[in-house]
Length: 508
Image 1: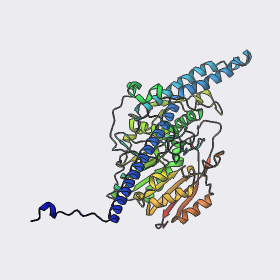
Image 2: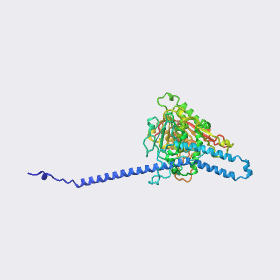
Image 3: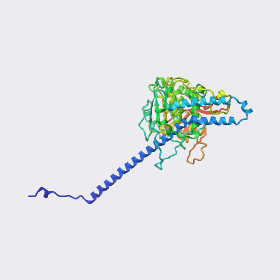
Image 4: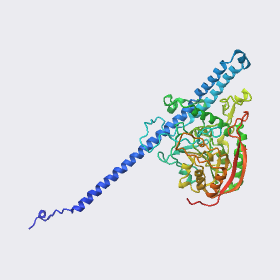
Protein backbone atom coordinates (compact mmCIF):
# COMPACT_ATOMS: atom_id res chain seq x y z
CA UNK A 1 0.00 0.00 0.00
CA UNK A 2 1.01 3.52 -0.58
CA UNK A 3 0.86 5.77 2.45
CA UNK A 4 -0.91 9.13 2.27
CA UNK A 5 2.40 10.87 2.66
CA UNK A 6 3.73 9.06 -0.35
CA UNK A 7 0.67 10.05 -2.34
CA UNK A 8 1.29 13.78 -1.66
CA UNK A 9 2.99 15.55 -4.49
CA UNK A 10 4.50 19.02 -4.28
CA UNK A 11 3.63 21.07 -7.31
CA UNK A 12 5.97 23.94 -8.11
CA UNK A 13 4.25 26.80 -9.92
CA UNK A 14 5.69 27.97 -13.18
CA UNK A 15 8.33 30.66 -12.89
CA UNK A 16 6.23 33.09 -14.90
CA UNK A 17 3.38 32.78 -12.41
CA UNK A 18 5.70 33.48 -9.51
CA UNK A 19 7.12 36.52 -11.27
CA UNK A 20 3.65 37.86 -12.08
CA UNK A 21 2.53 37.52 -8.48
CA UNK A 22 5.66 39.26 -7.24
CA UNK A 23 5.18 42.03 -9.82
CA UNK A 24 1.62 42.55 -8.69
CA UNK A 25 2.74 42.66 -5.07
CA UNK A 26 5.37 45.28 -5.85
CA UNK A 27 2.91 47.31 -7.90
CA UNK A 28 0.33 47.08 -5.12
CA UNK A 29 2.94 48.18 -2.62
CA UNK A 30 3.83 51.14 -4.81
CA UNK A 31 0.18 52.14 -5.09
CA UNK A 32 -0.17 52.02 -1.30
CA UNK A 33 2.99 54.09 -0.90
CA UNK A 34 1.83 56.58 -3.51
CA UNK A 35 -1.56 56.84 -1.86
CA UNK A 36 0.00 57.41 1.55
CA UNK A 37 2.35 59.95 0.04
CA UNK A 38 -0.54 61.78 -1.60
CA UNK A 39 -2.54 61.73 1.63
CA UNK A 40 0.44 63.09 3.52
CA UNK A 41 0.86 65.83 0.93
CA UNK A 42 -2.82 66.76 1.23
CA UNK A 43 -2.51 66.73 5.02
CA UNK A 44 0.50 69.05 4.92
CA UNK A 45 -1.28 71.29 2.43
CA UNK A 46 -4.33 71.51 4.67
CA UNK A 47 -2.16 72.27 7.66
CA UNK A 48 -0.29 74.98 5.79
CA UNK A 49 -3.46 76.56 4.41
CA UNK A 50 -5.05 76.67 7.85
CA UNK A 51 -1.87 78.16 9.30
CA UNK A 52 -1.90 80.82 6.56
CA UNK A 53 -5.52 81.58 7.31
CA UNK A 54 -4.78 81.85 11.02
CA UNK A 55 -1.84 84.16 10.31
CA UNK A 56 -3.91 86.46 8.10
CA UNK A 57 -6.82 86.51 10.51
CA UNK A 58 -4.51 87.33 13.41
CA UNK A 59 -3.20 90.22 11.37
CA UNK A 60 -6.69 91.54 10.72
CA UNK A 61 -7.59 91.26 14.40
CA UNK A 62 -4.32 93.03 15.20
CA UNK A 63 -5.26 95.82 12.80
CA UNK A 64 -8.49 96.34 14.74
CA UNK A 65 -6.67 96.20 18.06
CA UNK A 66 -3.99 98.59 16.83
CA UNK A 67 -6.62 101.19 15.96
CA UNK A 68 -6.40 103.12 19.30
CA UNK A 69 -2.60 103.28 19.22
CA UNK A 70 -2.44 104.32 15.56
CA UNK A 71 -5.12 106.96 16.12
CA UNK A 72 -3.26 108.29 19.15
CA UNK A 73 -0.10 108.60 17.05
CA UNK A 74 -2.02 110.72 14.53
CA UNK A 75 -3.31 112.89 17.32
CA UNK A 76 0.15 113.36 18.79
CA UNK A 77 1.41 114.44 15.37
CA UNK A 78 -1.32 117.07 15.18
CA UNK A 79 -0.41 118.24 18.69
CA UNK A 80 3.27 118.53 17.74
CA UNK A 81 2.34 120.73 14.80
CA UNK A 82 0.23 122.90 17.06
CA UNK A 83 3.07 123.32 19.56
CA UNK A 84 5.33 124.61 16.78
CA UNK A 85 3.09 127.61 16.27
CA UNK A 86 4.24 130.97 17.53
CA UNK A 87 2.41 132.30 20.62
CA UNK A 88 0.49 134.79 18.51
CA UNK A 89 -0.64 132.09 16.09
CA UNK A 90 -1.58 129.75 18.94
CA UNK A 91 -3.80 132.50 20.34
CA UNK A 92 -5.79 132.47 17.09
CA UNK A 93 -6.65 128.78 17.51
CA UNK A 94 -6.64 128.61 21.28
CA UNK A 95 -9.48 126.08 21.22
CA UNK A 96 -7.21 123.40 19.73
CA UNK A 97 -6.19 121.78 23.06
CA UNK A 98 -9.88 121.29 23.82
CA UNK A 99 -10.40 119.85 20.34
CA UNK A 100 -7.59 117.34 20.96
CA UNK A 101 -9.28 116.27 24.20
CA UNK A 102 -12.54 115.78 22.32
CA UNK A 103 -10.73 113.76 19.65
CA UNK A 104 -9.34 111.42 22.32
CA UNK A 105 -12.85 110.82 23.63
CA UNK A 106 -14.01 110.08 20.07
CA UNK A 107 -11.17 107.60 19.57
CA UNK A 108 -12.12 105.92 22.85
CA UNK A 109 -15.73 105.57 21.70
CA UNK A 110 -14.66 104.03 18.39
CA UNK A 111 -12.26 101.71 20.23
CA UNK A 112 -15.02 100.65 22.64
CA UNK A 113 -17.20 99.63 19.70
CA UNK A 114 -14.30 97.76 18.06
CA UNK A 115 -13.37 95.86 21.22
CA UNK A 116 -16.97 94.81 21.84
CA UNK A 117 -17.19 93.70 18.21
CA UNK A 118 -14.04 91.60 18.55
CA UNK A 119 -15.26 90.14 21.84
CA UNK A 120 -18.38 88.86 20.07
CA UNK A 121 -16.39 87.38 17.18
CA UNK A 122 -15.85 83.63 17.26
CA UNK A 123 -12.75 82.75 15.22
CA UNK A 124 -13.49 79.86 12.86
CA UNK A 125 -10.02 78.41 13.34
CA UNK A 126 -7.38 77.96 16.00
CA UNK A 127 -5.45 81.23 15.93
CA UNK A 128 -2.54 79.88 17.97
CA UNK A 129 -1.19 77.96 14.99
CA UNK A 130 2.29 78.86 13.83
CA UNK A 131 3.45 79.07 10.24
CA UNK A 132 6.93 77.61 9.91
CA UNK A 133 7.20 78.35 6.22
CA UNK A 134 6.01 76.93 2.97
CA UNK A 135 6.55 73.20 2.91
CA UNK A 136 5.40 72.78 -0.64
CA UNK A 137 6.85 74.75 -3.51
CA UNK A 138 3.48 74.62 -5.24
CA UNK A 139 1.84 76.59 -2.46
CA UNK A 140 2.12 80.32 -2.26
CA UNK A 141 3.27 81.84 0.99
CA UNK A 142 2.14 85.29 -0.03
CA UNK A 143 -1.59 85.26 -0.62
CA UNK A 144 -3.56 87.50 -2.95
CA UNK A 145 -5.46 90.47 -1.66
CA UNK A 146 -8.86 90.75 -3.23
CA UNK A 147 -9.51 94.38 -2.56
CA UNK A 148 -7.30 97.41 -2.70
CA UNK A 149 -7.92 100.34 -0.45
CA UNK A 150 -9.44 103.45 -1.91
CA UNK A 151 -12.05 105.99 -1.01
CA UNK A 152 -14.63 104.05 -2.99
CA UNK A 153 -14.32 100.49 -1.91
CA UNK A 154 -12.98 100.97 1.57
CA UNK A 155 -13.48 97.29 1.54
CA UNK A 156 -12.02 95.07 4.06
CA UNK A 157 -14.17 92.71 5.98
CA UNK A 158 -16.99 90.21 6.02
CA UNK A 159 -20.23 89.21 7.59
CA UNK A 160 -22.32 86.59 9.19
CA UNK A 161 -26.00 87.32 9.67
CA UNK A 162 -28.80 88.47 11.83
CA UNK A 163 -29.77 87.62 15.37
CA UNK A 164 -30.28 83.98 16.17
CA UNK A 165 -28.16 82.84 13.27
CA UNK A 166 -26.34 79.59 13.14
CA UNK A 167 -22.87 80.43 11.92
CA UNK A 168 -21.33 77.56 10.04
CA UNK A 169 -18.45 77.31 7.67
CA UNK A 170 -16.75 75.20 5.10
CA UNK A 171 -13.52 74.98 3.22
CA UNK A 172 -12.88 72.57 0.42
CA UNK A 173 -9.73 71.47 2.11
CA UNK A 174 -10.36 71.79 5.80
CA UNK A 175 -13.86 71.75 7.13
CA UNK A 176 -17.08 69.85 7.44
CA UNK A 177 -20.00 70.53 5.10
CA UNK A 178 -22.23 73.45 6.00
CA UNK A 179 -25.90 73.99 5.99
CA UNK A 180 -26.74 77.00 3.92
CA UNK A 181 -29.93 78.71 2.89
CA UNK A 182 -33.17 76.83 2.69
CA UNK A 183 -32.71 75.64 -0.90
CA UNK A 184 -31.09 72.24 -1.05
CA UNK A 185 -28.54 73.29 -3.64
CA UNK A 186 -27.39 76.18 -1.47
CA UNK A 187 -26.23 73.76 1.19
CA UNK A 188 -22.97 73.03 -0.56
CA UNK A 189 -21.15 76.36 -0.55
CA UNK A 190 -17.43 75.88 -1.03
CA UNK A 191 -14.53 78.28 -1.27
CA UNK A 192 -10.77 78.00 -1.43
CA UNK A 193 -8.97 79.82 1.35
CA UNK A 194 -7.49 83.16 0.43
CA UNK A 195 -4.93 85.45 1.87
CA UNK A 196 -3.40 88.68 0.87
CA UNK A 197 -0.62 89.70 -1.32
CA UNK A 198 1.55 90.93 1.51
CA UNK A 199 -0.24 89.35 4.45
CA UNK A 200 -2.01 92.65 5.02
CA UNK A 201 -4.86 90.88 3.43
CA UNK A 202 -8.53 90.47 3.78
CA UNK A 203 -7.59 87.03 5.11
CA UNK A 204 -7.69 83.59 3.67
CA UNK A 205 -11.43 83.31 3.97
CA UNK A 206 -13.11 79.98 4.07
CA UNK A 207 -16.73 79.80 3.04
CA UNK A 208 -19.03 80.81 5.83
CA UNK A 209 -22.79 80.90 5.78
CA UNK A 210 -25.01 82.28 8.47
CA UNK A 211 -28.72 81.68 8.29
CA UNK A 212 -31.23 83.69 10.25
CA UNK A 213 -34.68 83.13 11.61
CA UNK A 214 -35.23 86.66 12.84
CA UNK A 215 -35.03 85.74 16.50
CA UNK A 216 -33.37 87.54 19.37
CA UNK A 217 -30.05 87.01 21.10
CA UNK A 218 -29.51 88.28 24.60
CA UNK A 219 -26.05 89.75 24.56
CA UNK A 220 -24.79 92.11 27.25
CA UNK A 221 -22.32 94.39 25.53
CA UNK A 222 -21.47 96.04 28.79
CA UNK A 223 -20.14 92.90 30.43
CA UNK A 224 -17.68 91.77 27.81
CA UNK A 225 -14.38 90.44 29.03
CA UNK A 226 -11.34 89.78 26.91
CA UNK A 227 -10.12 87.18 29.39
CA UNK A 228 -12.56 84.65 27.92
CA UNK A 229 -10.96 84.92 24.49
CA UNK A 230 -7.54 83.35 24.30
CA UNK A 231 -7.17 84.53 20.70
CA UNK A 232 -7.18 88.13 21.97
CA UNK A 233 -4.18 87.42 24.18
CA UNK A 234 -1.55 90.11 23.67
CA UNK A 235 1.08 87.49 22.89
CA UNK A 236 -0.82 86.61 19.72
CA UNK A 237 -1.05 90.21 18.54
CA UNK A 238 1.37 91.86 16.16
CA UNK A 239 2.08 95.38 15.04
CA UNK A 240 0.73 95.89 11.55
CA UNK A 241 1.39 98.45 8.80
CA UNK A 242 -0.70 101.60 8.91
CA UNK A 243 -2.39 100.53 5.68
CA UNK A 244 -4.06 97.77 7.71
CA UNK A 245 -5.35 100.24 10.28
CA UNK A 246 -6.56 102.43 7.42
CA UNK A 247 -8.83 99.55 6.46
CA UNK A 248 -10.34 99.68 9.95
CA UNK A 249 -11.05 103.38 9.47
CA UNK A 250 -12.66 102.56 6.13
CA UNK A 251 -14.90 100.02 7.84
CA UNK A 252 -16.07 102.70 10.24
CA UNK A 253 -17.06 104.89 7.29
CA UNK A 254 -18.81 101.94 5.64
CA UNK A 255 -20.87 101.49 8.79
CA UNK A 256 -22.35 104.94 8.19
CA UNK A 257 -23.28 104.03 4.61
CA UNK A 258 -25.08 100.83 5.60
CA UNK A 259 -26.22 101.23 9.19
CA UNK A 260 -26.69 104.90 10.07
CA UNK A 261 -29.50 107.36 9.43
CA UNK A 262 -26.90 109.68 7.90
CA UNK A 263 -26.22 107.05 5.25
CA UNK A 264 -29.86 106.99 4.12
CA UNK A 265 -29.20 109.40 1.25
CA UNK A 266 -26.51 107.15 -0.24
CA UNK A 267 -28.70 104.09 0.30
CA UNK A 268 -31.53 105.84 -1.52
CA UNK A 269 -29.19 106.62 -4.41
CA UNK A 270 -27.70 103.13 -4.67
CA UNK A 271 -30.00 100.59 -3.05
CA UNK A 272 -33.43 102.06 -3.71
CA UNK A 273 -33.32 101.70 -7.53
CA UNK A 274 -32.25 98.07 -7.11
CA UNK A 275 -34.98 97.32 -4.59
CA UNK A 276 -37.64 98.99 -6.74
CA UNK A 277 -36.50 97.00 -9.77
CA UNK A 278 -36.63 93.70 -7.88
CA UNK A 279 -40.05 94.56 -6.52
CA UNK A 280 -41.41 95.23 -10.01
CA UNK A 281 -39.78 92.17 -11.61
CA UNK A 282 -41.18 89.69 -9.07
CA UNK A 283 -44.67 91.02 -8.25
CA UNK A 284 -46.15 87.64 -7.30
CA UNK A 285 -43.33 86.43 -5.05
CA UNK A 286 -45.51 86.34 -1.92
CA UNK A 287 -47.88 83.89 -3.63
CA UNK A 288 -45.16 81.41 -4.56
CA UNK A 289 -44.54 78.36 -2.41
CA UNK A 290 -40.80 79.09 -2.52
CA UNK A 291 -39.73 82.75 -2.65
CA UNK A 292 -37.38 83.74 -5.48
CA UNK A 293 -33.69 83.51 -4.56
CA UNK A 294 -31.42 86.55 -4.94
CA UNK A 295 -27.63 86.60 -4.58
CA UNK A 296 -25.71 89.76 -3.65
CA UNK A 297 -21.96 89.39 -4.37
CA UNK A 298 -19.78 92.00 -2.67
CA UNK A 299 -22.39 92.47 0.04
CA UNK A 300 -20.08 94.45 2.33
CA UNK A 301 -21.76 95.07 5.68
CA UNK A 302 -24.96 93.37 4.59
CA UNK A 303 -27.61 96.11 4.45
CA UNK A 304 -28.60 95.62 0.80
CA UNK A 305 -28.89 91.85 1.25
CA UNK A 306 -31.04 92.43 4.33
CA UNK A 307 -33.31 94.90 2.52
CA UNK A 308 -33.78 92.37 -0.31
CA UNK A 309 -34.72 89.74 2.26
CA UNK A 310 -37.26 92.13 3.75
CA UNK A 311 -38.87 92.39 0.30
CA UNK A 312 -39.70 88.69 0.53
CA UNK A 313 -36.75 87.10 -1.29
CA UNK A 314 -34.47 84.32 -0.18
CA UNK A 315 -31.41 86.55 -0.01
CA UNK A 316 -27.77 85.64 0.34
CA UNK A 317 -24.95 88.14 0.59
CA UNK A 318 -21.47 87.09 -0.45
CA UNK A 319 -18.43 88.97 0.83
CA UNK A 320 -14.71 88.29 0.62
CA UNK A 321 -13.20 90.53 3.28
CA UNK A 322 -12.81 89.35 6.86
CA UNK A 323 -12.64 92.99 7.94
CA UNK A 324 -16.19 93.35 6.65
CA UNK A 325 -17.39 90.00 7.94
CA UNK A 326 -16.33 90.58 11.53
CA UNK A 327 -18.13 93.92 11.60
CA UNK A 328 -21.32 92.93 9.77
CA UNK A 329 -21.67 89.80 11.86
CA UNK A 330 -21.59 91.93 14.99
CA UNK A 331 -24.18 94.42 13.74
CA UNK A 332 -26.48 91.78 12.27
CA UNK A 333 -26.23 89.26 15.09
CA UNK A 334 -25.62 91.24 18.25
CA UNK A 335 -27.48 94.53 17.88
CA UNK A 336 -30.20 94.74 20.50
CA UNK A 337 -31.79 98.12 19.79
CA UNK A 338 -31.48 100.91 17.21
CA UNK A 339 -28.85 103.49 18.09
CA UNK A 340 -27.11 101.13 20.49
CA UNK A 341 -23.60 102.32 19.60
CA UNK A 342 -22.05 105.70 18.95
CA UNK A 343 -19.11 106.09 16.59
CA UNK A 344 -17.17 109.04 15.21
CA UNK A 345 -16.35 108.16 11.59
CA UNK A 346 -15.00 111.50 10.35
CA UNK A 347 -12.35 112.26 12.99
CA UNK A 348 -9.41 110.88 11.01
CA UNK A 349 -9.26 113.66 8.46
CA UNK A 350 -8.70 117.32 9.21
CA UNK A 351 -9.18 118.25 5.57
CA UNK A 352 -12.27 119.83 4.02
CA UNK A 353 -14.11 120.26 7.32
CA UNK A 354 -16.65 123.06 7.56
CA UNK A 355 -16.32 123.09 11.34
CA UNK A 356 -14.83 121.10 14.20
CA UNK A 357 -18.33 120.07 15.23
CA UNK A 358 -18.90 118.57 11.79
CA UNK A 359 -15.66 116.63 11.98
CA UNK A 360 -16.35 115.38 15.51
CA UNK A 361 -20.07 114.75 15.21
CA UNK A 362 -21.39 111.45 16.64
CA UNK A 363 -23.21 108.86 14.54
CA UNK A 364 -25.64 106.44 16.19
CA UNK A 365 -25.75 102.89 14.83
CA UNK A 366 -27.56 100.83 13.77
CA UNK A 367 -30.48 102.90 12.51
CA UNK A 368 -32.70 99.79 12.67
CA UNK A 369 -32.70 96.58 14.67
CA UNK A 370 -31.71 94.04 11.99
CA UNK A 371 -33.48 91.07 13.57
CA UNK A 372 -36.74 93.03 13.76
CA UNK A 373 -36.60 94.37 10.21
CA UNK A 374 -38.85 91.66 8.74
CA UNK A 375 -36.34 89.42 7.03
CA UNK A 376 -37.44 86.39 5.02
CA UNK A 377 -36.49 82.94 6.21
CA UNK A 378 -33.31 81.90 4.47
CA UNK A 379 -31.48 85.23 4.72
CA UNK A 380 -27.77 84.45 4.93
CA UNK A 381 -24.25 85.73 4.39
CA UNK A 382 -21.55 83.65 2.75
CA UNK A 383 -17.84 84.45 3.00
CA UNK A 384 -15.41 83.65 0.22
CA UNK A 385 -14.26 84.59 -3.26
CA UNK A 386 -17.30 85.01 -5.51
CA UNK A 387 -15.97 83.00 -8.45
CA UNK A 388 -14.57 80.16 -6.36
CA UNK A 389 -17.62 79.86 -4.12
CA UNK A 390 -20.26 79.99 -6.84
CA UNK A 391 -18.48 78.40 -9.77
CA UNK A 392 -19.33 74.91 -8.52
CA UNK A 393 -21.69 72.89 -10.70
CA UNK A 394 -24.15 72.67 -7.80
CA UNK A 395 -24.87 76.39 -8.20
CA UNK A 396 -25.56 76.30 -11.93
CA UNK A 397 -28.98 77.76 -12.69
CA UNK A 398 -29.93 78.10 -9.02
CA UNK A 399 -30.60 81.84 -8.68
CA UNK A 400 -33.57 83.88 -9.87
CA UNK A 401 -31.67 87.15 -9.53
CA UNK A 402 -28.13 88.41 -8.99
CA UNK A 403 -27.62 91.95 -7.71
CA UNK A 404 -24.23 93.66 -7.99
CA UNK A 405 -23.73 97.08 -6.42
CA UNK A 406 -20.26 98.68 -6.69
CA UNK A 407 -18.89 95.21 -7.28
CA UNK A 408 -17.98 94.14 -10.81
CA UNK A 409 -14.89 96.38 -10.94
CA UNK A 410 -13.36 94.53 -7.96
CA UNK A 411 -12.40 91.72 -10.35
CA UNK A 412 -9.01 90.84 -11.69
CA UNK A 413 -10.97 89.54 -14.67
CA UNK A 414 -14.43 91.06 -15.05
CA UNK A 415 -15.19 88.58 -17.87
CA UNK A 416 -14.94 85.79 -15.30
CA UNK A 417 -17.44 87.60 -13.08
CA UNK A 418 -19.92 87.92 -15.94
CA UNK A 419 -19.45 84.28 -16.93
CA UNK A 420 -20.11 83.15 -13.34
CA UNK A 421 -23.22 85.33 -13.04
CA UNK A 422 -24.57 83.81 -16.26
CA UNK A 423 -23.77 80.30 -15.03
CA UNK A 424 -25.59 80.59 -11.71
CA UNK A 425 -28.69 82.37 -13.01
CA UNK A 426 -31.71 80.39 -14.13
CA UNK A 427 -32.79 80.82 -17.74
CA UNK A 428 -34.93 83.93 -17.60
CA UNK A 429 -33.18 85.12 -14.44
CA UNK A 430 -32.18 88.76 -14.05
CA UNK A 431 -28.92 90.55 -13.33
CA UNK A 432 -29.33 94.00 -11.78
CA UNK A 433 -26.17 96.10 -11.59
CA UNK A 434 -25.29 99.54 -10.25
CA UNK A 435 -21.75 100.85 -10.12
CA UNK A 436 -18.78 102.46 -11.87
CA UNK A 437 -15.79 100.78 -13.49
CA UNK A 438 -13.03 101.84 -11.11
CA UNK A 439 -11.01 98.69 -11.60
CA UNK A 440 -9.26 97.95 -8.33
CA UNK A 441 -6.13 96.40 -9.76
CA UNK A 442 -5.64 98.82 -12.64
CA UNK A 443 -2.86 100.73 -10.85
CA UNK A 444 -1.07 97.77 -9.31
CA UNK A 445 2.62 98.26 -9.99
CA UNK A 446 5.58 96.03 -9.32
CA UNK A 447 3.69 92.74 -9.45
CA UNK A 448 4.43 91.01 -12.73
CA UNK A 449 1.93 88.23 -12.07
CA UNK A 450 -0.89 90.62 -11.15
CA UNK A 451 -3.78 90.50 -13.61
CA UNK A 452 -6.21 93.30 -14.35
CA UNK A 453 -8.67 93.27 -17.25
CA UNK A 454 -10.17 96.76 -17.60
CA UNK A 455 -13.09 96.75 -20.03
CA UNK A 456 -15.02 99.80 -21.11
CA UNK A 457 -18.74 99.85 -20.37
CA UNK A 458 -19.38 99.09 -24.04
CA UNK A 459 -17.16 96.01 -23.84
CA UNK A 460 -18.78 94.87 -20.60
CA UNK A 461 -22.19 94.91 -22.28
CA UNK A 462 -20.83 93.11 -25.34
CA UNK A 463 -19.32 90.35 -23.17
CA UNK A 464 -22.60 90.08 -21.27
CA UNK A 465 -24.42 89.62 -24.57
CA UNK A 466 -22.06 86.75 -25.41
CA UNK A 467 -23.08 85.00 -22.21
CA UNK A 468 -26.78 85.21 -23.04
CA UNK A 469 -27.75 88.53 -21.46
CA UNK A 470 -30.19 90.95 -23.03
CA UNK A 471 -30.50 94.50 -21.67
CA UNK A 472 -34.04 95.34 -20.59
CA UNK A 473 -33.38 98.65 -18.80
CA UNK A 474 -30.38 100.95 -18.66
CA UNK A 475 -29.64 104.40 -17.28
CA UNK A 476 -27.02 106.42 -15.40
CA UNK A 477 -27.37 107.13 -11.68
CA UNK A 478 -25.33 109.78 -9.90
CA UNK A 479 -24.20 108.81 -6.41
CA UNK A 480 -21.46 109.00 -3.78
CA UNK A 481 -19.70 106.22 -1.89
CA UNK A 482 -18.97 106.43 1.87
CA UNK A 483 -18.79 110.21 1.54
CA UNK A 484 -18.97 112.61 4.45
CA UNK A 485 -22.09 114.59 3.47
CA UNK A 486 -20.82 117.66 5.33
CA UNK A 487 -17.34 117.71 3.79
CA UNK A 488 -16.16 120.37 1.33
CA UNK A 489 -15.00 117.69 -1.12
CA UNK A 490 -17.20 114.83 -2.25
CA UNK A 491 -16.46 112.32 -4.99
CA UNK A 492 -19.43 111.57 -7.20
CA UNK A 493 -19.90 108.64 -9.56
CA UNK A 494 -22.06 108.47 -12.66
CA UNK A 495 -22.79 104.80 -12.29
CA UNK A 496 -24.15 102.37 -14.84
CA UNK A 497 -27.49 100.95 -13.76
CA UNK A 498 -29.02 98.13 -15.76
CA UNK A 499 -31.32 95.16 -15.74
CA UNK A 500 -30.23 92.29 -17.95
CA UNK A 501 -32.07 89.03 -18.47
CA UNK A 502 -30.41 85.72 -19.19
CA UNK A 503 -32.22 84.45 -22.25
CA UNK A 504 -30.63 81.02 -22.66
CA UNK A 505 -28.06 78.64 -21.29
CA UNK A 506 -24.57 79.22 -22.62
CA UNK A 507 -22.44 76.26 -23.63
CA UNK A 508 -18.84 76.59 -22.45
